[in-house]
Image 1: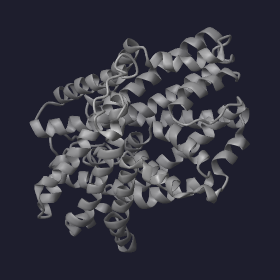
Image 2 (image 1 turned 180 degrees about the horizontal axis):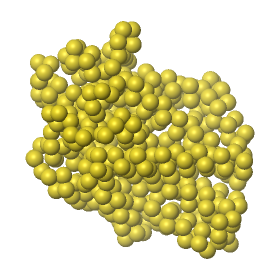
Image 3 (image 1 turned 90 degrees about the vertical axis):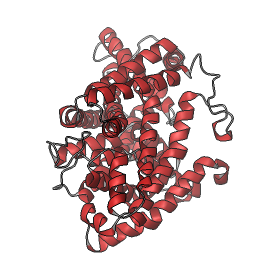
Length: 472
């Protein structure tokens, strides 16, 4: 469905549901499935969860709505949409660099996100082989020592050829959807993969409730311990709310450009935020019963996914099947996020240089592939290569960790701050009123948040990333 006045970058979502599913797919990723549950359990349980939800509503949703309204009004790539809004507001067209920063962030994130997606592909293959060998009812990796199971991950990431090949395969799958356009590719991925993701998530959660340590997991996640809600923990909750919604990477501006005028952006933003938060909460109830039933510690980060959980699946009947289902589920979440990351620079190339979509997508694929290869090798042969090591905050970091730190601690927060300032203080008030779908007190509250609360909270995230010692 082509939108009236759309640029060559756009062809539009076929329905409101398609947009919501695609936006949820963009937001839901590895952070929801691993980082949030571990953060919640270790930092006050229910108190952290309540404060996180508070941050999603007061910080995340206003920025999310700001990004989508810019895109819907501009109906172009992210920088062009910002330029149009600035021009119609009588402001400098240089504001387009706000979204340009987001495009750069999205591309750089793609450069290492595909590597992690490749790791997931490797584990899908690993569990698939094990399932064929042990059968549906058997535990995973029968007869394999625990140390060897937990050693699968360090052995894999240090194997350069394997990680580069897996990264390339993951990016090629992402490319296959992006090259087909919005309604022909990206939308189809969202409409099929996100419902499948939710089915697997709920199915594994139900399995864990009956076969795992369910009550222990609920207590770990939701016991209200306000004394643990310190300043650093609250700031961590703000950061989790911000990063969980994939803000600051121009993704929601780009996806917003494909939305029809009949869609209420405030309502859809609320649905996206609620779905993203629900996934984070359910993920904890999905993962920790399996972990606790095996008598293992609830470690956070990638170690939980790639080392602790495979060991836990080794201790349970049907572990091969559940392990395979789990990593397929994670693969779906990683893929829908990766599609959004690739679409952002692809749409910009189409708009900026009037390229055909296949040409633009191939350029992004090749660039992401090069960055991905360097990131993949940074765990092995390039472990001693520190590209920005002369800067204190990047000292000792390889390519993958450098890209992660550069985008997560600098570019994304700066981009989101500027988006909030742009919508709150620069964009024409009538234009914002027209697009945001709010009225009355809610509209005034949105303006207050986007003008004051959001920039201040995001500045705190930025400073915490640059000066972590301030929180000690």
